[in-house]
Image 1 (spheres, one colour):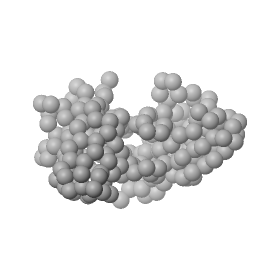
Image 2: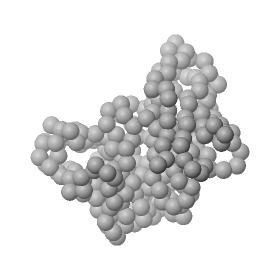
Image 3: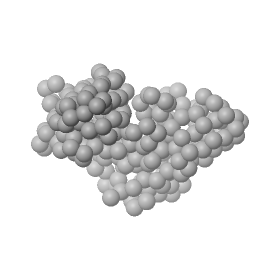
Length: 114
Length: 116
């Protein structure tokens, strides 16, 4: 079965510092890949997605992610973190075709300190 | 863009009562909708897949008689938590793929259920 691993449960970074959140997936083929952000008590907001093509994907709020097939990874990055980026981040995958649900990682909680 | 709307966003009920949560696709038709549950500080877990005009399919461990799903139209799916208990308190989120399927799911805002 497909699975998503986010190895970091909680990350703390200083405001203005760079950020990388790790995501690895296990699946026989290249799935659709997503990163979502969730603020406390809120729903999910899509940051970016990868379906095919350029392996470096730009998203909203200055985030980007790079798909590395050889490593089965889709890490999320941001060059300079803002205090408002503090939230829970979820990596997710879906099958390539059909009406299939997303499988989510367990999430990484990001704290931003001054 | 596509929008999926959930109602209510928050609901508090007494133990033993039933609660209905609606999920609507506002500008597209959704033959399939997915219902997720998220316990505090945990990830989203798929509960069931709602199919328009047919029975929902439930994930292992999800009681179909407790979580009734009805997908009566191409824009509306409902989740009814029957005889709710405090352990059913959770954040319930629906999602729907746009047709034709592009692989992207659109999520509702979520419904926070608190059972007293």
